[in-house]
Length: 358
Image 1 (cartoon, helix red, strand yellow):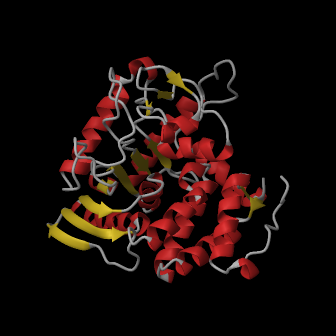
Image 2 (cartoon, rainbow, N blue to C red):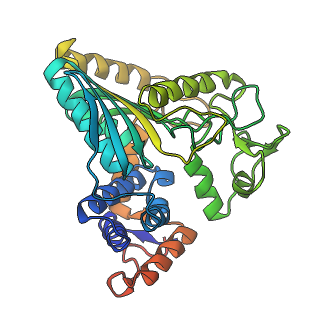
């Protein structure tokens, strides 16, 4: 399994996206987003998506260089048509607009439709939090991407509908929650599939409700589906997914899950909150720091070394991977190498130099 430096991976991704038809501007944004996802340890939303995006560009499903269109706007709200652009570009601009409105009016809410795969949702809320803004983001797939059974059901009815909440802290990184409302995101299944590994029990079932651990069956077996977050209390994950489908899908105009399943195009709801309109930022930081200190003082359960607060694991992953490089599973690297050769970029993409056999 090669280890690549973040900068080298970013160079490779940019070259491939531009070769497939992306503008340099878009390619840089998307490449950085994918590499930062890997740095945080969210490999399911990282560079393994490069082949997917290259194919989308080549097939015209991803339109690079388009500008999002504001369809409706007020002092605190906006509705945006992403016009089939890169999700990372469209959602990034949407969150920037929400933050701008929050600074002007206290609250900024933006709904987006017709946007391609958004990538790691926590990237957008974390960026707002680094600017001193509390932020929330949620995504559906516009009625597409159905892969999750409702609680008590046996057939796919919802997408993985992720949710992210981030707040600023007095520490070195924001406090960040970034979760799928299914027991795992689809990208995790894809990662296990590419690496030839089994998924943990309790993630997937077949059409009869029997447990599955072979990730191939998720893509090849009729009726295979993800379970909602929560295990025996999966009604909680299902309930979150259901309401996110409404807020991200119905509110944005992207559409909710339905009998006629469309191709997945993200519907997104973003909310930015200017903390200073509610309480002095210094007081907010103090209260949050007290909470963090109190929670982390909890004695760890057997099998655990310490209690982590949201965003802490990602921050530690980033520190380590910036030092040691990003591990790239052999099947993922093989796909990327194949694309490099197909696009005539081999002479500019030598073998990785960072700890190649780690």
